Amino acid sequence: MKKLATAIALAAGLWAAAPAHAADGDPTKQAILQHYGDLAQAMYGDALKQARKLQTAVKALVDKPSEASLKAARAAWIASRPWYQQTEVFRFGNAIVDDWEGRVNSWPLDEGLIDYVDTASYGEESDENPLYTANIIANRQVKFGGKVLDASKVDWKLLRKLQEAGGVEANVATGYHAIEFLLWGQDLNGTGPGAGNRPWTDYARGGDCTHGNCDRRAQYLSAAAQLLVDDLTEMTHDWKPEGPARKALVEHGEDGGIAAILTGIGSLSYGELAGERMKLGLLLHDPEEEQDCFSDNTHNSHYYDVEGMRIVYSGTYKTLGGTVMKGPSASDLVQKTAPDLNKEMLAKLAATHAAVLAIKQRAETKEAYDQMIGPNNPEGNAVVQAAIDRLTDQTKTLERVVGSLKLKAIKFEGSDSLDSPDKVAKKK
Picture (tube, rainbow, N blue to C red):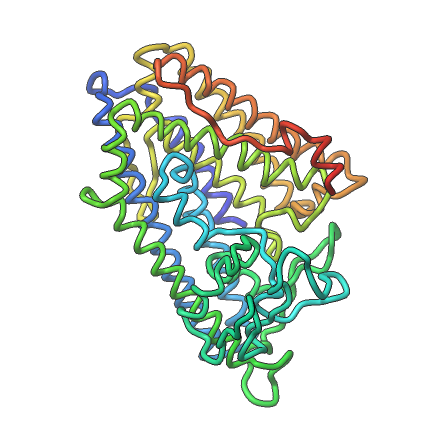
């Protein structure tokens, strides 16, 4: 808690010190795109470093299972999340990121694909997903699509085959949330207090093993951790100066590149975070709709998504190693053409930051995020709704930013939860 509080304080000081415009003159669009690419490379690189630390902790758990090694692996997972979540702002404006993202951060997932579940709460079958309770860890072969899938060897090849198998997005076999489930297990507390509580003995050897197949569970966890490192390595390389992500950005042209930056901020702000990750769960009061649902870490994921937006708009980032990267940004460009609007946008981002910080602080002192969105909790609901309102509000200002730069019309991601909430409620 102290480390997180310190990080927040440092970030607040960093943003307060960030200039509204470049100190060495008006930036060119080319310079802004160059710095944007540099930020992406650095941020994915930091996420990769933290994923490697997580992999080391997973290896320690698998090699010597114990309560302490499970606790350490969980802590490493939580420590890795902020550095990845900050990169989500690159997703929607860059097809190469959006196409790749499902491997590392897909959710929600049908966890019965991977391991044992409590069928009383989870159910035993799904009309939408024939692999709903496949339990790959317990079964060496699975009938699927008229064929038999060989699962005798639990390795990265098997996990790649299972990822979105049959075109079902809920078949999430890789990434942060598959690892999260394997470390915490299901959260069976609904909107009451408590997270998942998988016992360390699920990885024990011999007669101490609980729920069976501890060796295969360890193999799955190890393979998932390795794939996370591999996938983040790939994306870090993609953002190198000659990498495909940079080349694609250049191919958009200068205005197209600026549009990509603003699309990433706006789509994450409105459709993804305010809508699918927050409003949907609040409308339904459903803990299954919270992002980090096994670990009760959702408050941090939301907070660092907003940090990513602020980083990219301002062009200022504090790396894992403590170096502060500052460079030409979208903020500088707007400052040049519409300084009052830039001031408004920075103020809206600050207001959103304050709203998600309130969620984070409440989660760390009073109740978890799944409790906040629960029924009969008007105070908790209001805290979450306030953040949704601020995200929606800053997106409206961002639309005006796009207009001020005379860019071609940008379509931000929408969300039925925001645009047609009555229909969402009726569907459920």
